[in-house]
Image 1 (spheres, helix red, strand yellow):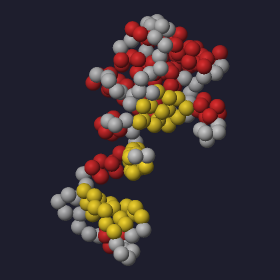
Image 2 (cartoon, one colour):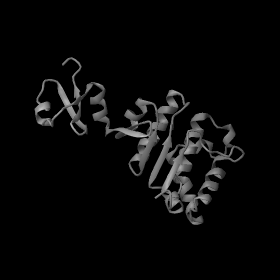
Image 3 (cartoon, one colour):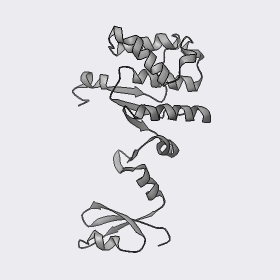
Image 4 (cartoon, one colour):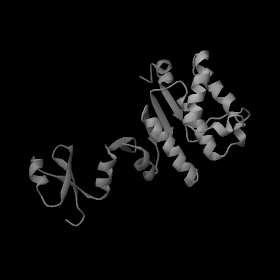
Amino acid sequence: DMATQREQAAPRIGYLPESPPLYDVLDVTSYLRFVARAKHVPTHQIPQQLDRVINACRLEAVTQKECYKLSKGFRQRVGLAQALLGEPEVLLLDEPTAGLDPGQIQETREVIRNFGSQHAVLISTHILPEVQSVCSRVQIISKGNLVLSDTIDGLAQRMQSSVLRVRFRTPVATSVLASLPGVKNIEETSANELRLYHEPSQ
């Protein structure tokens, strides 16, 4: 519970805000070593952890460069590297490719996909192609409410459908509605109210 067990939860979470929290006067290796200590990574494990995140984020060419000299793409990668230190179970990434050029976006997405094979990765973004490129599930929040939770394939299907919200005076079997021409999916939103996803031409 993040409200009452923050100290226990923090080591299990890696976080990358939209603007990476870098110390510009430090070089990349010094900065990552500082973060490792702040995360209480055991001293004898720090060299191994640094090698792991530097290789994963493809930072070999800039390890001795001060952070203020880094391009936007490399700053994002250093931000990803610091989030990975301590081997957290969950990564929270906020707009991880914001402001990057197309080449940097592709590289950053590839790094995130690789992370996803070993970590739970939650990405907050307004960029739909980002979601389709790197995520397996999507949740859409509107005004603080969860309005959609589905797989990427399910989202693509919804985007090709029209939606009707239908309210009945008495309950209707969804099997009857599902047999109607063009109906692709049905969701129950409340008592006697349904969402019908259907082919736009139907």
